[in-house]
Image (tube, rainbow, N blue to C red; front, side, top):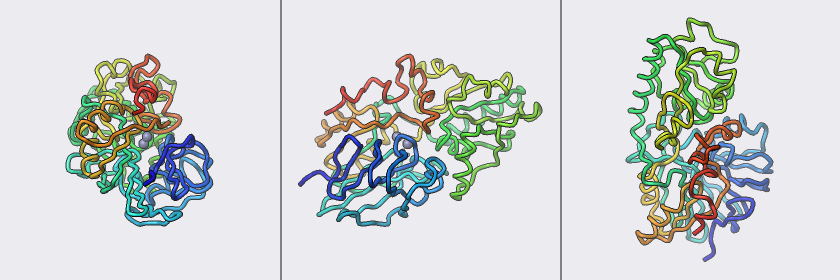
Amino acid sequence: MSDLVVLRPEGLYCPAGDFHIDPWRPVERAVITHAHSDHARAGHRHYLAASPSAHVLRARLGEIRLQTLDYGAALDIGGVRVSLHPAGHVLGSAQVRLAHRGTVWVVSGDYKAAPGFAAEDATCAPFEPVRCDAFISESTFGLPVYRWQPQARIADEINAWWAGNADAGRASILYAYSFGKAQRILAMIDARIGPVYCHGATEAVNAAYRASGVALPPTLPAGAGVAADDRRRALVLAPPAAQGSAWARRFGEAADAFASGWMQLRGARRRQGVDRGFVLSDHADWPGLERAIAASGASRVILTHGQVAVMVRHLAAQGLDAQAFATEFAGEAGSAADAGAAAPGAAAGAPGAEVAAPASPAATAA
Ligand SMILES: [Zn+2]
Ligand SMILES: [Zn+2]
């Protein structure tokens, strides 16, 4: 039986149905797992994506020829039955299930999977395990050192940090990817502490989330300037690229922090040059990857997107048929604008983005 998904120069490809999944070069028909820029690129002729992603996809890509599919609904593409299932990563993120002649493959896209697949992130549907024969899983944080705390604990940390700064009369600037992470944080914070300002890049995505029916607390655009009284109690959300800019300096003597899974690494906060690091990721940690892979029931697992080598060995030791695909997906990035400055210490060669991480595609090809 030939493989339902193979790796082509354009990206992941389903030969039986003649379509690509998250291709990085323009193709005729693209199934898109989610609207992050390393997965949803411009220039494809047809797009298929989960219904809840429509607003964020269009906010990012403009007018595209987009067909949407509700979670769990199925569509026949060239004899392959295609359905999309929640991945719990960001609004509209989906795993792609492909069924053809009795064989089922699932492409995870990016996902996060809390213990018990519980719904922690209020801005998107939680990860739903899908049984399959072969599971193509992301592995951005595929090292045992990555273990996330419950979201509620991180929310308490962020709120305490913000309240402490507000009591001391200084603004709190929190750098977070503008699509996904920022909205998740907005849904986590205690908006009674003070006013919330957002960078223009973040505010644009907030609008797409609200248009999609996601409840977020009131936010103010930080572009036009902030009154001194407000500034002293403000929480300011901005993409990492805004760090050190004139834009950030308008908030005066502010405290700053970075929210990312990379903050788990020793030295990452210092390399990023911020006062605080909050370990908050929209990707699965090591136990989350194990949980999702086990729940898929797949006997064959193909890892992409990040630190794949250790997980490949770990799964092979359990008797699974494990291998890696060298994809061109970036690390934990939110947009093209974010990606350049997103990786803490990327310039210094620290593990910040996939390209800078120790596991290079060449080293991890199985
Ligand atoms: Zn993503
Ligand atoms: Zn990704």
